Length: 195
Image (cartoon, rainbow, N blue to C red; front, side):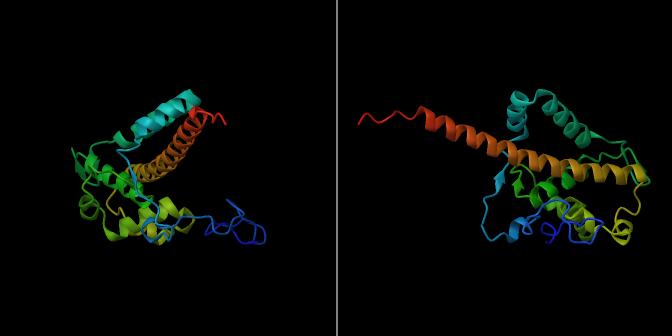
């Protein structure tokens, strides 16, 4: 048995999968997918839609997720490295939207050129690795990015990565559930044939 896709393996003989018994399970670069999955356009199904559905099903969890996403996106100490009184909103949005883009979620109202301006190639590699293959992060990789950031800023970036990744997964789940409910509802409402 091999580990699921590129999942890390257990401590034992190195063959016990940690996350999945499906060896093809794992992150697939959205741009390189063979199945040509459609882009998830955030304006067609927003976090507000997902929250509304989850709130009907599990109100406490939905509220906790909403508060966690909002706090992570808005958290700032107004400094970046040695600079004080810095509005880090643009940087935080670049990290968040880059992760969503990695998972095929596009924000039509966002200028993705900002990602390339604000995140160096090394930083984008680090963010992608942390979001998609966290077990591959090395000490060298950690040390090559955010060199001037304070430890609290590095932790905040890691929180952004984790929460944007989680929100992407929850958005796909909520949209799939919504689509299932609407298909089921349409099937039930179809008039029965009389013959």
